[in-house]
Amino acid sequence: MNWETEKQAIRDTALQQRMGLSYAEIQQISLVLKDRMLKSFHFQGLKVSCFVNIPSKKEVNTIDIIHALCDENQVYLPVCNFSDSSLSHWLFEPGDLLIENRYGIPEPKNQHISLSANLFDVVIVPLLAVDKKGNRIGYGKGFYDRFLSLCNPNVIKIGLNFFEPMDCIPCEARDIPLDYLISPSTCHSFKN
Image (cartoon, rainbow, N blue to C red; front, side, top):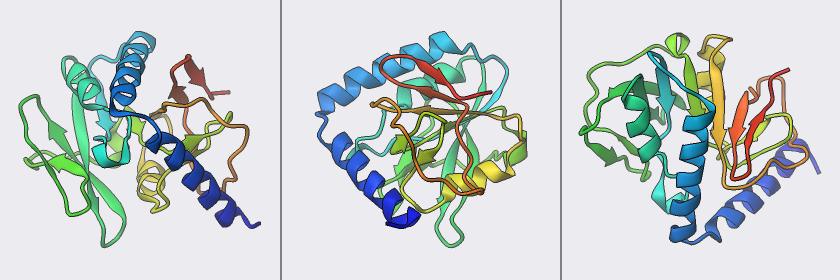
C-alpha cells in the first residue's frame, strides 16, 4: 500500500468514526474541547485564524470558541478559493453573518478586512485524524498545508478532535504538524 492509499484509508476510517457520533455527543464533546482549550491557553491581543465547522461533516463545533476568542483577540475566518486551493481570512466580529458556500462550508458574509498568512499568531486547524507526533490528515485538498506554509514559523497550530491521537500517519516533507491537539482527555503537546 502506498502512502496516499494509506492516508485515504485513514481518512475514510476517521470520517466514518466521526459520522457515528450523534449530534448530542458532538455538542457535548465540543463544549468539553472548548473549555479545555480556553483553560489551556489564555490568548490575549492575538490574531487568530479559526475554521468554522461544517455541520454535515460532524466537525467539532467551533462557533462558541470563535465567540469566546473574540472577547480579547482579533479572530479571522477562512474563505476557500477552489480555483487554486488557497484560503483567505476575513475579520469576524460577533453578530457577523455566516453563509454557506456551494460546498456547504460556512464563511463570513462580510469580507471587508483580511489578514496575510504571515501575520497570524494562532491557527486553529480542522482535521480528520492526528498522530502522536502531531501529523494530521484533513480532507485531502491541501488548503491548510498551503496556508500554514505561508505562516510565520512561530505560529501556534492547534487541532481539535473528538478522538485521541493514533500511532502514526504517513507524512511528506511538505506536511506541517500541529503544535497542540485538544482532545476529550487532555491538551497534547507535540512541541520538542
